[in-house]
Image (tube, rainbow, N blue to C red; front, top):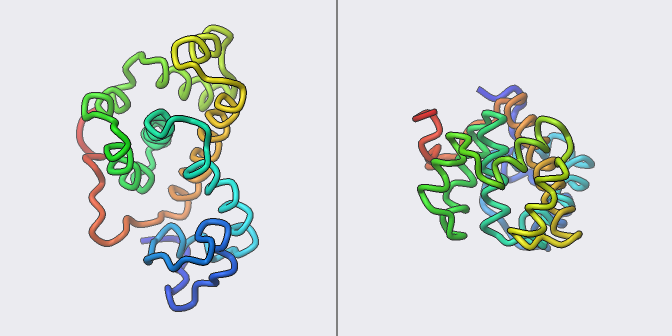
Length: 177
């Protein structure tokens, strides 16, 4: 059970959600219902979150792999459940998802692990991301802020015990390594 009462859908403040929705109506979501307990924080966070999710310079596949690795490292069932289907739509394979879960020594897993664990990329990993993935300066910044932003969100989801949305599968979160 969540630690904060969700804000009922009928009471959602559309102005607070504007950075994410642009005025569009969105369906109910436990993450938004939770965030709306603090409207000022929500408005500010959604500005960053919208950039990371929809306007980032990172290739979508790479972004989703990074988010999944953060979710797995942080043991965030909600974030994992939300992003497995998104990652699959962006071309992430079941094998790659298994590698995220297992902590296989892939370049992206290593990058996320360094950022999440050491708050810095090693020179070698930074160079490999530029060379092998072709990341430029803005993409490197987007990667760092993606790991940090989704890390903060995972921390919040876990702390406040945000429940999965109705009908959402946890993407095999409880299985395997």
